Structure formats: C-alpha cells, structure tokens
Image (cartoon, rainbow, N blue to C red; front, top):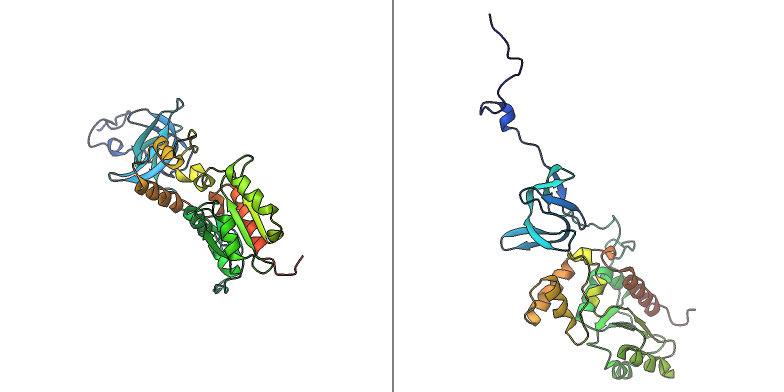
Length: 289
C-alpha cells in the first residue's frame, strides 16, 4: 500500500523541476522614455541613452531626481514587476516605396544633370544632414547642396555666382533670429535689387544644426543650454558626458549623431519645412509662376 504526499514534491529539492524553472523574461527593445527597474540594485529610471562601449552595449537610466547611471544591456530588469530582457532598439525603417524624406521613391532613377540653381548651407555638418535625408530627392531634381563655411562671405559668393532666373540660390542659415549677425547679413543681401526673386534666405532657430536632430534619437533627454561665450559644441558634449577634448572628439560626436538619423522623423519639423521650401524655390522653372 502506498500513500501519496498531499503536498507534492519538495519544491526546494534539487531534483524538483520547479527549482530549476525560472520566470521567463520577455525581450523588450530599448526605447527612449521606457521606465525599467534594475532587479539587482533596485534602481528605477527612464531610458535616456543607449550606446556601445568597450565593455559592450549599455543603457542609461535616469531616476526621478535626474540622476543617471549606465547598466548593461540584457536580462535582469523589471517592468511593472515582470522580468524582461532589454535588447537593442528596433531599427527604424523607411516605409516601402519612400525615400528618407518621405517622398515617393523613383525606382532605378538616375541622377538628373545638375541644375544651374544651388542650395547653400552654412557648413559641412548642415550639408551632410541635408544629404542624409533629402539626398535621393535632390539627385532626382538635379539640385546641388554646397557648404558656405558661414554667412560672412555670402555677399562675395553671390557676386561670383551671379544668380538669375535660371540660376537661383536658396540659403539655409543657422540662427536666423531677430538681432543676430546672420539676420543682418541676410537682410542686407535681400535689399539688393540684383537678387530680388532669385535669392531666398531661410533660417532656422538652432544655434547649430546638431539641435535640429531630435534629442531622443541621439539618446539624450534634451540638448543642453550652453552659456554665451562658450564653444557650443564642446559645451554640449561636456554636459551630456561625451568626450570633448578637441576637434577630433567633436568630429566623432557629429558622426555618431549623423548615424542616428535615418528618416525625416528623426529631425525637428521646423528644419524639414525649411529645407523643402528651399528645394521648391530652386526647382521653379524659369518663367513659371
């Protein structure tokens, strides 16, 4: 005669299947603003950054007091008490048949012979960002984007270029706000009768084109404020904790920012509208109204 144990097998026994069964962790992609808890330390915070380091991929969690700590990617996290495994972010993809700017893609389209008109931007970073998002559109339209290196020389460049109805110039200017040096330069050019209707300045409010990239895309909560008189780029890098020793660190930071941009959704709409207005301006056919 045998008796059954009404309590079942010893759950603490090494031979018990339950002792070897751990709660399964769901995989959750890293996403800015996602609140998680590190199960080991109890640290609770929102994800404000994600990067690859020499020790592997890490996420940065910011608690409710604004303190930030890095944690390794992988298991050991809780969301609403349930165990999760943090995995790399889901890559952003373009909609089928669309360019990075959201325009309808033209399959196997060859680049058009360059128009006489140009879009001028202030610097190399501006040109690279415009190319990253609107490059396909610009090649179809035959529009060339050229960096100026600043607005100080724009008047001389215009004299050299000689714009007319078939050779328009659209200028995307940094920090075109009331009272700025850039605004005074743009206003002086605009008053020149030689350039009426064939030169168009459009400004954005950012101190630098970096600010046009949405902070969450880069893995930060916001672009920090940098006091006047301090170099803006190195000031930003110091405040967000990236290397900022010299121009090489600035160059590496920009490439990191640029790599984070995939589509028009990754930049501020204020920039998108201005670039597309310039494209429309320089692609108007002579005589069109």
